[in-house]
Image 1 (cartoon, rainbow, N blue to C red):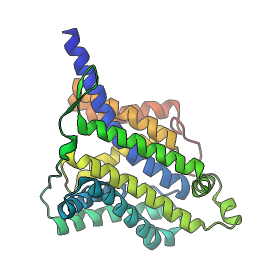
Image 2 (cartoon, rainbow, N blue to C red; image 1 turned 30 degrees about the vertical axis):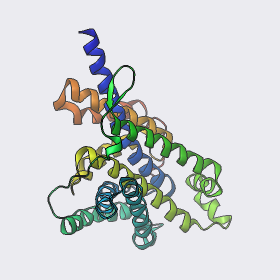
Image 3 (cartoon, rainbow, N blue to C red; image 1 turned 90 degrees about the horizontal axis):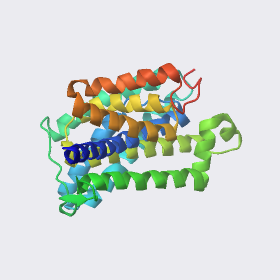
Length: 294
């Protein structure tokens, strides 16, 4: 019985980790965009959904999962950059409510556009044959594809960290989150930096959607529920904090996983309880700075 309980708890912990890394990809993108641009991107869930649909289409055209996976994320990133230039840049300097309302409206438009292009029925995105089966982790057997999702997310986060800390563009982005006026004063093209950041955030959302496609299917409403939980992750971690997004994403993933195991009816409520408890102790989140929304 004890061995069965250990196996069950270990399996659930790894399931939570697999869910948590998806939250991390979404929350890091949201935090990166908010940290530099001050934009609360309500279209992030739709970008997540687009990543799954683009991946499905590329897989149909090429038959290669790897091209489809990364190609889908890149296409969402390009779409995000175009969105920033065409829609968000004209709103720069205005009230934070304006881009919030615009991205909310954009999310609705994207959902309806997907229904028109791909249809209302859900689509199946097959797991690549190389990643089927289970991996022996020594103490549990765990689906190989979920291990791949966890490992790829870790690689992406390390690459993002190296980009932000070891490249000139990354250093400018970090400086821009602290003092955008100084970045402009030094003569850097801040508009281009905003576009790059929004593209990176969109690509991370697209990658998350592409990774989830083989697990839960592809459908137009797939971004609706997860974006709410992703905003909870951002708030818990602290608005604009990338470290907070990573830690909070993993924590919320485990909370959802174990609540689903022991009290399934409260799995969605649990994340809001965690958020409420954190905000009571730390109103700006675990790693957030006060005054960011002022």
